[in-house]
Image (tube, rainbow, N blue to C red):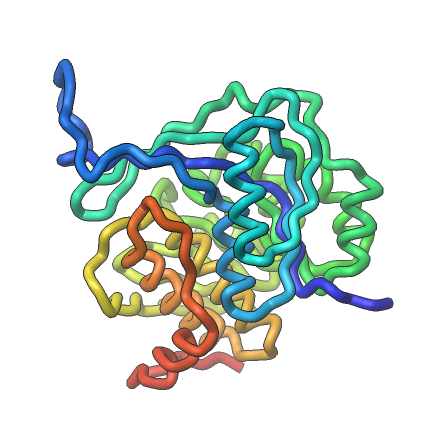
Length: 307
């Protein structure tokens, strides 16, 4: 069977409105004067993963629901301008959007507009099956319609990854994604016991690899029953925004995985890509390129390896 797509990204298309704030949490006030201003740009989790994979030279295809609205036009333009194929399903409720408050240290607080979705939202099964059958791998965002696509994806035989983001390890909503994927990414932010949650994902699901990202503390890799700490990579330029760092980590890791690298090097690719993302202003959608990624990895004094 021909696999013309390296990675099919499902879900996670949308628009963020970026608001630079003087501090987080933001103290109550009647008003704030905002500089450099308030700006909307395309780029939510699926967009960023697709952008990161494409920048690394992988043949990437994005599938999601989009509205016939200005926000949808921004998403369509992003994919068109970057040359990333996009299959869109009509979304009567409108394109997903969020407001990101970004502090001076690059931390962010995201406010998601939950009205841009409906209980009945689905990705057409035939479309999912057709695209999956042409793909080597699928990365699944944890949006509501994607949960219903998991059985068709599994039946297609394509390997799966997902990012549980700031899962607390208990919310049942995330479990279908966590237990269906072969590679699971999760943030340690809300986990009381990251290792326990990582091992539970392996025990109850089909994951071969679980990666827990921990910001400046690096990441943790669980594979073959062994937990390994992956040191953080120092960004080459000042940190300005953490938005998209986890998505970039996932893209870097998947690039390594799909090019046959050992897991330790995959994690290093992720760490380098995630560090780069932290240097990109929130108002831009950008990702590290393959040459820069490989150059930075080659310059690393220590490359953790795992065979």
